[in-house]
Length: 109
Image 1 (cartoon, rainbow, N blue to C red):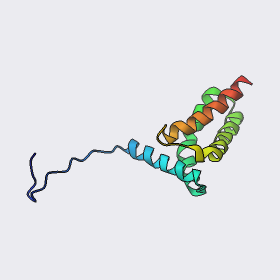
Image 2 (image 1 turned 45 degrees about the vertical axis):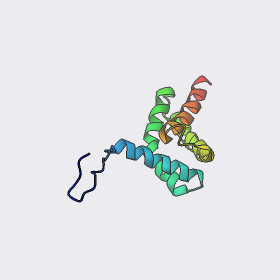
Image 3 (image 1 turned 90 degrees about the vertical axis):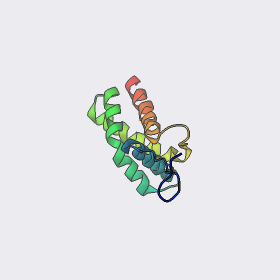
Image 4 (image 1 turned 30 degrees about the vertical axis):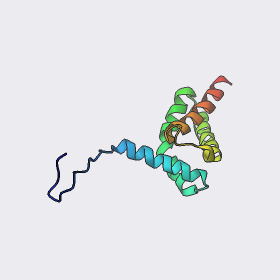
């Protein structure tokens, strides 16, 4: 293995994409939310609300109903955030599953 002028082997650096950083940040925010950190949940909401609303509106086209379901999804996510396990799925996927479940239920009603 080649060595640097200092005599040490060069350190292999792995580039971390912005998406990976965002993914890790959102996981951290959801874990903190599970510990009751309202500021972390507010930040998580700010990042994910547009995606959640977009998903919900594809299933429930009525804007007022979509807004209500999006709000309900985030209330449910807040209440259940202590059960989030970052080893099982991403924070984004976890919140989207919560929203999807509620939207499907509303669409079937």
